[in-house]
Image (cartoon, rainbow, N blue to C red; front, side, top):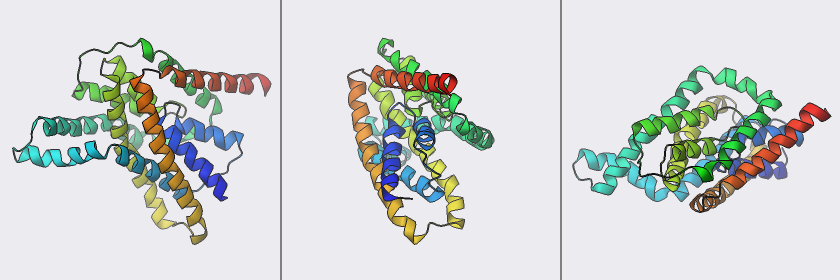
Length: 269
């Protein structure tokens, strides 16, 4: 793997993992359109770790509080803020359950879908639609709770389909339920940590058996660093866009990309 290719793939992973335009869909399209060959298991694991690092940096305050909160609650020393973060711990666990179920029982079936380019474009089209309607969703005074967290988790589980954005689906579901859009965006990012970490752990089993060669470490490190930096920038960008309620622009991009891809695939080829 050439180092430039590693940087491109790392940047693509970092940006699309968090922007509501589907990382899986863009990686499938990149491999098809740019003739990228299989980048290797080790590279895939480490670029995901790069995006995980970016989340931990941006939300370090919230994550620290979520780690401290359970102990403080059990000791009876938690203030209102720590009690709220303790609730978020519970909500993240509840939201992760649907993805765990699908990952355990449908993993092999879902993996076969990644070769279906028409499905990728169709899911991108759906991503575009749900993003373009977000400005019309009204915020209410409802708060996160276990049922709403479970519904957001179901949206995350559905995003296992290539082309259906995980961040877009979860943010849309939270906004549809009336939760404050910035709150649900932060929750969406934080609840992605178990999903990303779980994928890394599952892949690491094979990585231990077939560790990367010394020659590939430079490319792996380049891709990982690029993924972390681009992931950080993508999170900051998306939080700013959400505060201004401008998610529809990502929807326009997905609709144009999906429409062009469907036209090319169905009509020109």
